[in-house]
Length: 471
Image (cartoon, rainbow, N blue to C red; front, side, top):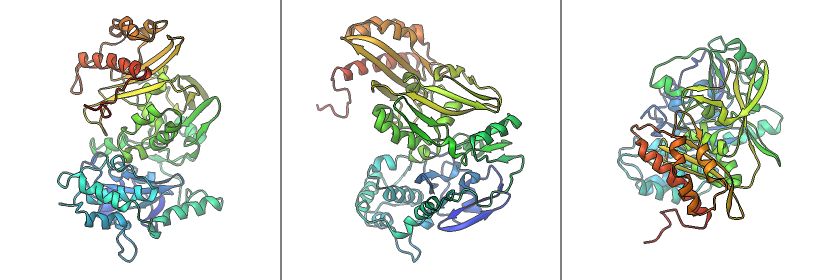
């Protein structure tokens, strides 16, 4: 596959790029840019963080699970490109020196890129921005002090160059460099430009691996040493990256990244957004897509429960046409979804509704951890009684699943402790959880019951956030 992109401000054109070549390996081995480090090689530690810019803006991503074809028409900036062209230090680099934010230094390049990206975007939530960067020796206090010290400094001119390039392309009617050097790819890799092209390609290659953010496929490559073929890269399908807000619905294209979903949910469903703040890390959210998370079909994926509780509809597409189904019906059994050969997820649609959603994620680690239980609740109360209830969970069964017996028990109950008591036995009719390394079956069942208690207490004005409870 032939691709072109900007690397630290300079145009790069590559021919016959292997579909499974990672950006990290190419940077270190082919370009000699070894400031970007290899740590975990699975998107967790952040030592390989680079900055990617396109028409949607700039964001920090993990180079270790970023496949080179995903860079087509984008701008890539490594730690070597964070400093100025004449060796001037970026404000975050100077602040790290001033506040002693580095000891062994292995993790420091990743921190610098994450901090510089947040600085460029005007982000001040440093704990969130750096949740995907791990340091074993310095400790986070001096690093956070450095980020805070640099926050007020102006953005250096050279850090605006990538954005200015894309703005110029868009204003001139260009496609943000999307067509640079895009020769017809061989049968092992494809990069369609539209969802219609994707539907036709998938009809011809129903066995193909679809690559959106590669946060999962990247691990097949780096950890399992797999070389899936053929591969279809979705990053050029702009029509899959659209968000539509109407009086009736929120329609989110399958290619919309989770950082954009987070921004959307802040406005419409803040509790969902708060859960997404803990979804992976900033680097993962910048790459992972909502369609990829759904199509993956994981029983512990954090997106399906709130979407199911909100009554979301899934839109599928193939060369034969389109069809829609309730999202909950998409998950048939463990590892099996209602998706025919040649079909792909095109969009998910959420009906507009009053915000009664609460989402609770329970995991051993607060940030960037797999849920033991994720519960989502939409309960409508009229005249002090439950009129409607939709409860959906991840981690409680082999698929994301509604608690239909609990819902039935709640309907008509007084919205008091009576509801909890009435629904008590119904939980075991809905779920028989497994015990594994994250939680026992008994723990999961107790946690699910407690989440309903929390919803009730919060809805009645109780204080349930332990971080705000004063002794």
